[in-house]
Length: 43
Image (cartoon, rainbow, N blue to C red):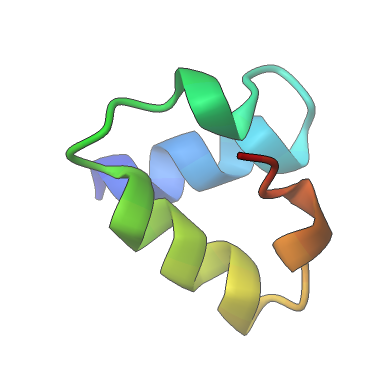
């Protein structure tokens, strides 16, 4: 649930991937990759 919330924030450019809590980053990464939006993942 929280991973989807943060994924949406990254997609909407409200939060950078690096600002997502580290415990949620794997889930957010999976959602972005599944949505073909892996370019939003900047390390």
